Length: 514
Picture: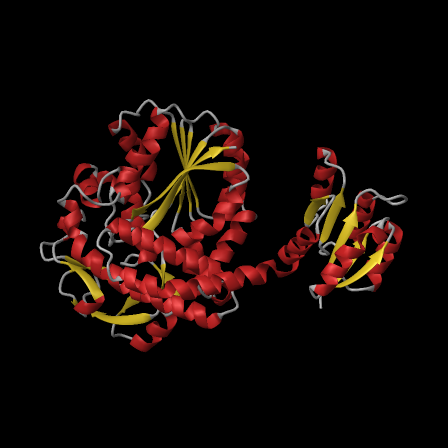
């Protein structure tokens, strides 16, 4: 039975309220002054306190302050006759759980208690009931999806349920949703295999990586806005949904959408295409000095600033002052934050932030990270917790203060892989676990989206016989040599480069300062 304390110097006038709460299953203790209330909360384990603001002796606000010093986590509901804004602000500043204005009726009090004591449980129960009712409709809907837009909307629905069920203790139901998502990924992979190549010869297609700057960033610059262009490497759509509330105090969400990463959904290809405004084959053909092949030494993304500047010229925005920065570790992040004021007059300040990508790779190599990011839900929480304490959040706060419009996006997502698929080839094949390119490969066709001519999907090739294969759903490629060792090593790690909802359907957002 929940144990409640009600503190009011006219407590005898509230007998009806007390009887009502007792009838609803609450145990209610009372006292008529702040000093006694402070003694009681130390002696008795109360679940919540109702506290009158206007009392002789210790006032309600003074009592609240001392009570929070003693028991910071104790939920306190302030009750007052006053509608003065200053009193409301002081009470809220002391982290009250709720604020009620007299006269209060018993149902108001009951609602406040339910929000405080049962809120999470009620939300969890509602999510459980809602998904149980929706399950059949989702199963039917996924069989009838015909366009990329329909798939994007369906993916949104799946993630909404996934985030709602994060609050639920129903592990069995989460398992049902995971199985439904896996089935959706199998069907989406088939959709991509049937349509992706056609997108390069048809007008009707989703926005792809190389079109984002022209369609989202350029309009802001043409409107005279200063743009903070943030590319968070490897940020999935569900992770964006998790971090949105962290940014809401500083930004209005002016525009938000989804688009499709190009294949391979890997940094070398997708991010170079993003900054160049053209597909990788076109980069190699028109700006070969900025393209580094898979087998060549050196960073594959070392010319992103130059590619972006060239794209801005092509878009008629060559007069805009453009600054490009890349952050790969905490030292670099702190250094950029310390000097970021130097770029306040830039027209477009581009920051590539590599933490989320580094985290996904660390899960492969580091046991501690494997435990911290054991599944998608834990991964989301980890990304949100990181952002809340990171220099990046300080940079975004600065951008808001300086009046920048923030365009936030990623280059691709990542998927938790579970099932191995054997592939045989020469030592010159690419090392990525989710895609392979080269010639003379032997593989299981049913596990792959096979592209016999990479040029048809905008990719360069070294030899005339080169082909590409992309792993579907949660599969990953493994060579026969030490097969069992590498299966165990890479299973349940986050990889990218292939075909899945998580890797290909990625977010962008346009945020304006509050």
